[in-house]
Image (cartoon, rainbow, N blue to C red; front, side, top):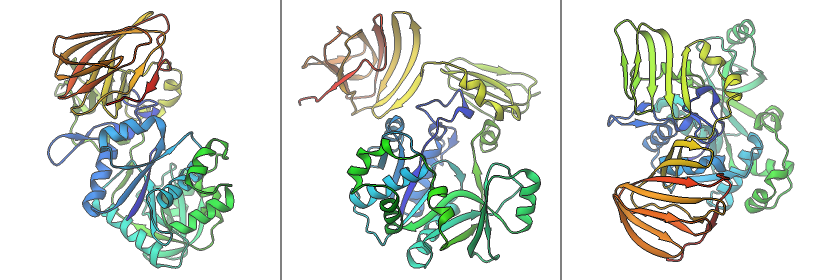
Amino acid sequence: MNIVLLSGGSGKRLWPLSNDIRSKQFIKIFKTPEGDYESMVQRVYRQIRKIDGNATVTIATSKTQVSAIHNQLGEHVGISVEPCRRDTFPAIALATAYLHDVQGVREEEAVVVCPVDPYVNEDYFAALKELGQLAEKGNANLVLMGVEPTYPSEKYGYIIPTDKEQVSRVSTFKEKPDVKTAEEYIRCGALWNGGVFAYKLKYVLDKAHELLDFTDYQDLFGKYDTLEKISFDYAVVEKEENIEVMRFAGEWKDLGTWNTLTEAMEEASIGKTILNDQCENVHVINELDVPVLCMGLKDVVVSASPEGILVSDKEQSSYIKPYVDEIDQQIMFAEKSWGSFRVLDVEDESMTIKVTLNAGHQMNYHSHERRDEVWTVISGKGRSIVDGMEQPVQEGDVVTMQAGCRHTLIADTELKVIEVQLGKEISVHDKKKYELEQ
């Protein structure tokens, strides 16, 4: 199975756990079979591997999410990087060209596309495999998955099939309706459109060449910023006559708000939390190293992270986005391919950060023009390289870097460091990368 997972969005409706770098799919709140916590993307990836251990998985995403994907899924997952946001048709065209030109997927093979963040069980991925087989062996150019609706939702578009068979021709599509119209659609046998579909690679590759001027993957990548922003539904699906839909009646949830996310949590609280016995339908996620105490609350979600603290009625939490849009907050926590960092303190001319490097990883070899830095190792062992000079470092060691000097850290074990940045213009843009000569 060739599967493309669409990973986008800033997840502002799940503030303060999500931000422009850490979208909702990277938040670790789901219990694994081993009792640890995993994120939506880790859960989906694990479920795919369980159904099809040989699946070719490619994640179509922006540059800002690449580090988090490598951190959570490892270095070997396929990634089709969008140089900038251009909606779903250019993203899927780029991913399809990537599969063909980089991964070597043949034109007659099927490709399944779905969002990276549905809350589903393993029967969903068995259905995806069947969807791909229908696309590869059938006559339809596109095969959609239509989810059997459980209530008249205003959040989804609807697919109207021609009959009630398991696989049907598509009669028409309907945009997101009001509740009354959705009830009428459901009475007519309509299915939710969850943005899941399959096609032979050649079909979308030909469509891409028809609608976009490019020669191959590298050429399309190079001119990506000149492409029109257009959805796959509008560019392809709504204009395609030879199209089928396969019904799916299993569990399927879009966990896009705090209200829906807490419904999928297996426990009432994560992190240092205390709920007294008068609390009802309360969920708490605490990423801070301080306790959160809740008493006598009902139908409330509490979320605390380095980005901020949310205390909200669950229904009201769906209306969070315009308030978060007004918050101008520096990114306080991020996962990188080499580990993670958390901002501890910000002053006018200094910033203090706790950096965690995973064993066997290292930072980029880089320099800053407008700030000095000081590293204090608080645990672990590794090596520092400053202007080409390598030295071992361990707990208690201090390394000082003047502005302009090249530096990196290499972790032999998990390495934790307090980094103090000093300067009048501290900026994430003040960074120049170099090749490290081994």
